[in-house]
Amino acid sequence: MTAATTDASPTTLKAKAARPSARRRLRSPAIVLPPLLVVTALLAVWQTYTSAAAVDPTVLPSPWRVLSQGWENRQDLWDATLPTLQETVAGFGMSFVAAWLVAVLLDFSTWARRGLYPLLVASQTIPIVAVAPLLIIWFGFGLFPKMLVVTLATFFPLTANLAAGFASADPEAMRLLRSLGAGRTRTFLMVRVPSAMPYFFAGLRVSITYAVVGAVFAEYAGAENGLGIYMQAQKSAFRTDLVFAAVAVTAALSIALFATTYLLQRLALPWERATRRKDHP
Image (cartoon, rainbow, N blue to C red; front, side, top):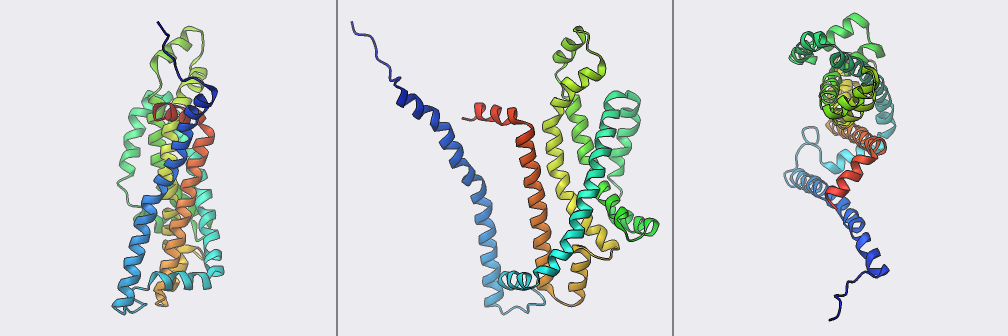
């Protein structure tokens, strides 16, 4: 009787090990390509319509006009983008610190969780459009009121996701650490914080896009410079093409910040990516 032979040569093993990597490389274009095709198709329809119907550019400029005029006025757009980026980063930084402090308080204090969390939920019913002008009246046209608007726009998603992440900690791991003599703070740092990280980054990605919108809206309410003021000025001058260009810059800024948070998650949580690879080779 002859023993069954198995194909276990080094070359074969290397080929099998390389297959998941090849599939992952093929998966990256598959993620980017569909939305890129949709955007390209929409721009093509837009360009065709404005050219065929001879639409007045003050009403609806063509994508090519938006691109060409935006490039021609790139220095003005850049000068308007810097204050908006500063307000976004500063306000989001304040929101980041406040969200962690409040989420930790909610986790450690039952009283705070029962008394404060419903108020946080209720605060989301207050429109920012009503609060932003008041902040401008109270604090002037400087950086601080814009930071507050960004903080108000981004605080709740961060806090809610962090609180949910802390609550998702494995109770068995918590009991094990307590049985080994770990205190509440050590248990929190070793179990609850790692458990909350995926939730935190999910909230971070949502909040960072709100941050840019909040900064632009704060500038609409009252500012001396920024993309919001730039849009208002160009709208008053009937330069719809430059308004669209500023909107495109705002969208690009949001996408860039969103991608940055995704990169930070990959760097901070390498085990999460390894788990996904194991589950979906």
